[in-house]
Image 1 (cartoon, one colour):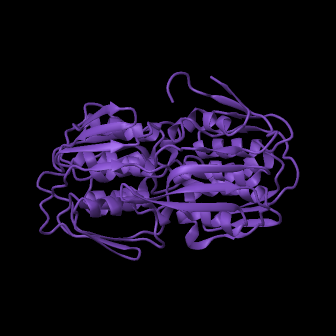
Image 2 (spheres, helix red, strand yellow):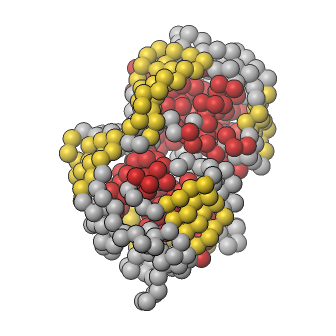
Image 3 (cartoon, one colour):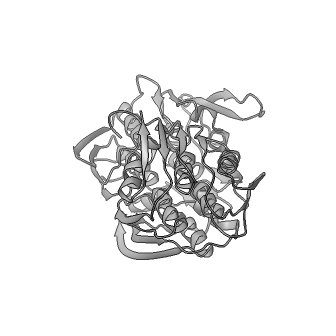
Length: 454
């Protein structure tokens, strides 16, 4: 979003259903990886459909600071001239990751194998996020990484992180690591470090997390094998070169989820979202919605950038409370807050389990969402790994919501506010620009009445 930042929005009750066909920002998970890999390639890459969400911009700026040439060639189009795998240069200043945990954790994997020192910093929210899940396995293969000690959790570290250099004559070694959590950020950081290692990388996770990194590595000719949730990266015999590539980034399934759920919980609504990535590791929310009885149609549109895409339409149908747990949760982890909106408007009880990963996102999303739901008059119980939510009939009560600097909390609160009996206020909304800069404008185009304040 350019110009003045939206810091507060006032959402008015819907007078009629949301209707329309709209685009969404490009997938920021794929955007991060396209920027990282193109910067490490030999030659020129072209990225189309770049959304300029602030998280992706943080990654672009970091790669520029280390020698990659990242140029805007047209609106939404970037040309990246890579440094080659071994060509990164020491940044002159700290690398500011803003609010982006993905930027910080993936960069830590890249920087672990460098012969120079770098410092990774972020905003107040990112500085509270745990980093040992990435730092621990990287240290185990020889990386030198320091962070700030956690004030209450012994052995945990927080940003800022200081990475490198490797001691003279030392190299990253092989690593066999079984992660206790299913996390694409942990997986990607370890695989990125494996590009610089002398020895094989084996990684295993409990259930399959989003696999954009593996897909891109395969496409670039990196010697990678996957069997279920096990990945092997063996660089023996590989020349360490990745060619430049062209990619068009599909629409972000996580951004689309907010618009689809809004249509599914308000009578008279029908919303279509175009060109959305439907990678199976990202479609958990769609399965949850369907299981609860939501109106949903998915029309495949082929592939874009090696990822399946579709046109998705959501419409209102009466919803039923369900249990959300198990393997679907990692595939919907970023969408669990908006799944809480489905639960709030469903008949009966919805129980969300196996989502303890939400405790260490931009905010503690379990605790924060419990507060949001109660503010709107929805009865819920907080669990260590999830929530029990009682669906509420009739209008919600108007609320004033603090986003805690968390974009997904702010957007979920805005969707719930459309069903309140009077205007609701969401404050600290500039965080929305990290992933969906045109969120307010898109809702307005569908028929919502929202006042924005800067």
